[in-house]
Image 1 (spheres, rainbow, N blue to C red):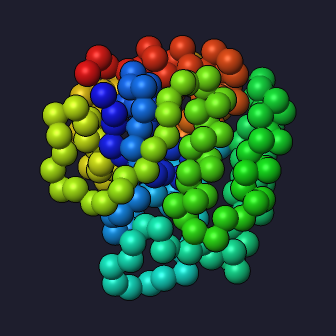
Image 2: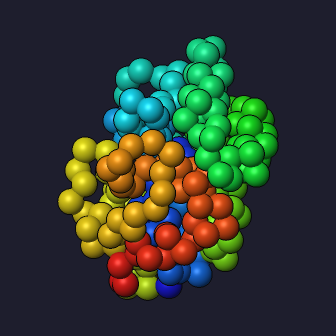
Length: 208
């Protein structure tokens, strides 16, 4: 079985819980970009609580294929993201172990959002030691065959009810706060748990 899913920016733990049980994933390469989604944003945990990191884009209106959406490097977001991550996770047990990988991936400055997300997804899968093959869709298909797990739009910023079918938060020690903050970007988990992060992902996954 393969899972069909869109790309996210530094995906959430639920994203990896959803795909961890399949041998391959197919990235939706032929969708139109959807605003106000995880395609260009993620959540981390700061001393003040959840913090939203948003990648600015160059287009403003109309339908645009995800592969045509350009990242706006004219804005200072990259430096701000790296600074925010450093501030939030500088004291996390495994931050220094993974920091260089993240900086290298971001500082390559891919022109297109899809390519940026692809690079970061590959990095995160490697961090988690998840043996998942990445493929790309050849065309947009509204309906999929029975051997495809369609996860497109399953993990939404504003509509969270769908994730209950494949994600159950498994707590771990975070840098800030006495109350566990669930389903942050997977970098929160990796910086805090290191090689043990994959066990938390698997414990968070609900059997499909």
